[in-house]
Every structure is written in structure tokens, then in C-alpha cells.
Length: 261
View 1 (cartoon, one colour):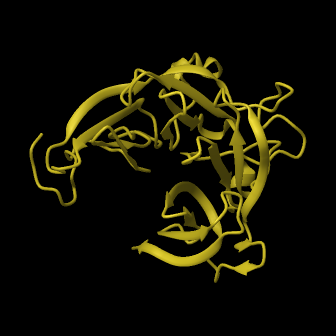
View 2: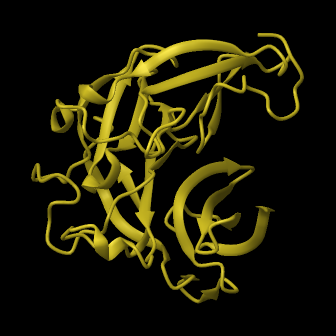
């Protein structure tokens, strides 16, 4: 599909919110949830991706379905929807997809040989004792995971949710506590360190006030010139903010709003 580079850069029939762009092998790939036209709820479709050469961002290609929600053994009936995902290339050169099945509070992991899949389910993020994250007493609610393979090969997973007025309507033993960081082991799903809270729902990153832009959802992580950039949606629900740190576990320092409507 050859067209303008400015918005909307995808066809008008395509609905991929929560977009995470990643460059692999000279192409940029867009990963996100997948809304359905006329649906009664969001994120009802399976994951798809589009890609374009980094030299020509007007030339987008539909790569097809990369993951089916029924792949997850907790969703054989397809009743749960796939919320905002993220993808990384692991130290082994394989590609790993991280996602949550709507309000289950667990993080699924799928693996593929290339950026467009098909991704195959390999398990849920878990502790060393085999207990799945989200099933221990005191675990926080997991939501919209973000993942980063660092320069040294270490893999960091970010996930979390902030308090809302409607969350209590969801019958769940987990509580929204903020954003957490975990270092993953070589299998890309066992927690090696953490979870450690890096942003709490009160808008504080340890000693820093976030000027009212409390963490709500949609964690997104990048590393640029030695700094870790953690992007998130605030409680205002209409802005994207960011904070930075020299360490993946923080402390993170609030830097401001990237975009607002």
C-alpha cells in the first residue's frame, strides 16, 4: 500500500490502537491491539501487524494475523480479548510477544522465528517456583505489558494499572497498584528479579512528584543513549507522559507530556 506518510498512515478500515513501533532488520513493525468495526467492546480481533521499510514510511504492507487469541490455553473458547501487546527480539534471536487477556491479570508469552509470526504460545510469566504472576497473594494487577531487550542482553518487562472508578466493578483478587518492572530469565518468561514498583498510582516515582499526571496504564519502554524512557497514559485519559532513569528499575523522573488532545 503506497500512500501518504502522515495520519492516517493505515487504511481507514484498520483499527490498531495502542501501537508499539519496533525496527527489526531495516523495517518498522506496528504492534497493537486490534479493534473490530461495529463491536460492542474494544480489542475483539486477533493481533495483526503492518510494516514498512525505514527508508519509505509511505509504503506500508499488511503482514496478516500474527497471533490468535485462542492460542492461550486460558482462552480456548475465545471469550477473552487481547489487550495492548509488545514484542522484542530476545538474546536468542527469536521474537517474543507479551500480552494480557483482558482482565485476567496474567501475562501471556508467545514466540516466533520472525517479526510477523505466526507466534505460538509458550506460557505465562511466572515466578521461580512456577507460580504464575498474578496468582500470589499481594500480586498487583497486570495490564498492557511492555518489554525491552537491553544492550547487555538482559530483558526487562513492565506492566501495571492505576486506580479507576470503574475497576471495582471487575471481580478480581488483584489490585491496581501502579507500574512494575521485572527482569526475565533466559526462558523469557520466568521472573529473575522483581516485580519492583517503578511508578505508583499516586503519581510518585519514589521521591518525585509527577505534577498530578498519575500513572494509569499503557506502559511503553525504550532505551536511548543510556537513558530508559518509560512512556505511559496518565489518569487524565487523554495524554501520554514520559519519565526517564539511568536504571531500568528507577528511580524514574517525570519529564512531561508528549501528546495531549
